[in-house]
Every structure is written in structure tokens, then in C-alpha cells.
Amino acid sequence: MANSLLLLAEAVLYFSVMVALFRFRHRIGIGVFLCALGVMHFLETYLASVFYIALPFGLLSPGSTVLFSGKLVMLLLLYIKEDARTVRQPIYGLLFGNALMIGLVLVLRQHEIAALPGGQVPDIAFIDQMGWLMVWGTALLYVDAILIILFYEKLGRHLSRQPLARVAAAVCTVLTFDQIGFFTALHFVAGAPMEVLFGGWVAKMAAGLVYSLLLVTYLRWFETERLPQPRGLTGIFDTLTYRERYEALVEHVGRDGLTGLLHRGRFETDGEVALAASRRDGKPLSLLIIDVDYFKSINDRFGHAEGDRVLKSIAGLLSNAAGAKDRVFRIGGEEFAILCEHPHGIARLLGENIRQAMKGLSRTNGLEISVSTGIATASASTGGLDELFALADQRLYTAKTTGRDRVVGESAGERAEAANPERAAR
Image (tube, rainbow, N blue to C red; front, side, top):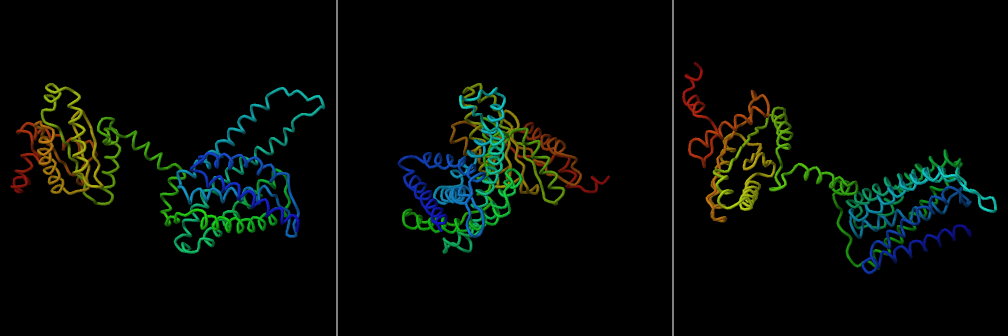
């Protein structure tokens, strides 16, 4: 009975101090809360490896039952009241911090150790044991933290009006997973008996219920803002795993520095992918190559800074004119390209709309700006992106040599063949 009361007192003390730091995060900074959270990690692992108490249902460690369960609930609180971008900071901080610790221990072991006057020397075997348990425990924590947030959001669709059931179900489910995972390592590294598995699980279920009740009480009485509505699981997972940063980096790397449009390298890779998809799915694919007329004269008369400003304006116009699924590229100095999933007629209409829009851009910039456009649409006989590009480029050349400021979607010979199919057949 005394052990049970002490566990409850430890849980209440842990929760009270941590939520107090969290409550005053806007005054003292969220870093205080996060540092306190991280400092407890070593103690949790140490107690889980050597410090156990006996209860009627089995053996358990306060480190795993009270401290680890409490930390998981604190991460959930941080997510609920802040966001996924904030909660991922301590998750990754603990992960990389423990990896650094293991690296330093491996280096420290190379020292020639001097014994203290009393003959004491460090227990290297225990350091190794602790190190592996901390690595495994931190990896589990990483998975646990993501799972508890995803479970919490998933349950929100059905239990949004029952916050205690929602929190408790998420917490207890993840603690069950963690108990199995951590006991596996504890059994092989420290020789923990099976009583630890069952006793620890029962204790964690009790801790999960206690912490869930404390968390919901805190949210109801001390956090005045309403809880957010359930959020999309895909977006949360992408944020927690930094996938959105990775995608943004890839997107940034593939963009032209001046205009922000996709660059020539992306045109070649994306174009081949789009052409393959067009053949596979039977969807139309058209390519517009757009060249600014007499652009050199703008640079010569007004300077390159003005020329850059014009290119940025044209890039913005093309992005606005293109559809949501269309891709706009800067493939040369003043040459642009648009890949669109449109048949030839619609692609020509897009080209004409862009040509007309350039007149408004001319009035805005006080310059005479026009563009010439060549259009080609993929067919079953199109050999590849190079062939599609060559055809559009040939039509762009026709537009340039026949007066500029125009859209050419087919050559004069093609128009004649279309008008006289018998001649084309001969």
C-alpha cells in the first residue's frame, strides 16, 4: 500500500511541476519546460534498469511507470496546446542528444583511467548497459511520441466530446506498445524477469489513467482556449517527421534563383515523368515555349536590373495564367516553358491568353513587352521530351520569323495537310 501511495505522490509531483512550467511558458519561455523534460530522461532510464519495487501484481520501476509515462503525456500536452512543429523539437532533441552521448562514451572509453584514492574505478559494463538502454529507449520514445499524437487525432473523430476517453485511450495504447518494446531490450540487456513485463504494464495502465485525468483537468480549468478541432493525419505526420522541410528543400533546390520558377533541370526530369504518365493514362499533354520579344533591347536601353524586374513580372504573370496542375519553368535567359495537361486547342487558348495579358503588363511597366509562343502536343508517336521540345521550339521559331507577338501551334505545312487530307495521304 505504501509503495502505491508513493507512486501516486511521485506522479502528482511530477505532473504539478511540469504543468506549472508549461503554464508560464509565455513568461519564462518554452525552453524551461523542454529542458526540464529532457533532464529527466537519464533518471528514467537509470531507474528502469536497476530500481524496482514489488506490488501484488508484479515488479515495476518508478522510472518507467511514473517518469516515462509522465513525459509522454507532457509531449501530448505540448502538441495539444502548441503544434506539431513545437513538439517535434524535444522529440528530436532527445534522439540526437542520446546519440551524441553514446558517441562520447565510445571516445571516453579510450582513456587510461586513473583509480581514485579509495580504489574506485568506473563501472564500464554498467555504462555500456545504460548506453544501449538509452539508445533503445530514445528510439522507442521517438516512435511513441509520434504514435500518441496520431492516435489522439484519429480518436478525435469519434471522441471529440469525450476528452478523457480520447486522451486515456491514446496514452494507454501507446504505453502498452512501449512496455512490450522496452521490456524486450531490458530482458536481454539486464536480464529482467517476466514479472517486470506484466507488473510494469499494469502500473503503466494505472499511470496512464491518472495522468489522463490530471491532463484533462488541467486543460479544463487552467487553459482557457478551446481545444483545436481534429487535424489531418497526413499533415501532422509530415510535420513530425520533417517531411515538409525535405519537400520544401527539394522544391527550393529545383527553382530558378531570379524568378522562383522551376529551372531547366526540373523541366527535363518533370517533363519525362509527365510524358510517361500521359502515355500510360491516355491524358493529353501540351508544351508551350514562350520567348520574350526583343528582350536584349530592354537590357541595352534600361540596364540588366530593369531586365530582371521584367523577367520577374513575366514569371508572375505566367504562374497566374497557368492552372493549378500546370508546371511553369524558366528554361533560358528570357525563355519559359509551360507543361499542361490540356489538348492542343486548350493549350493554344492558354497561349493566346498569355499573349493578351502581356499587353496589360506592358502598361504596368511602361515598356513594350510581347512574347512569341510555340506549342506542341504529345501524341502516341512522340518519341520523348526532346522530340516534343524540338517541335514546340520549331513553332516558336516560326512565330519569331513571321512577325513575333503571336502563338504558333502548327507549321504552314501541317495546316495545308490538315486542309487537304488527300494531298497529305499522297
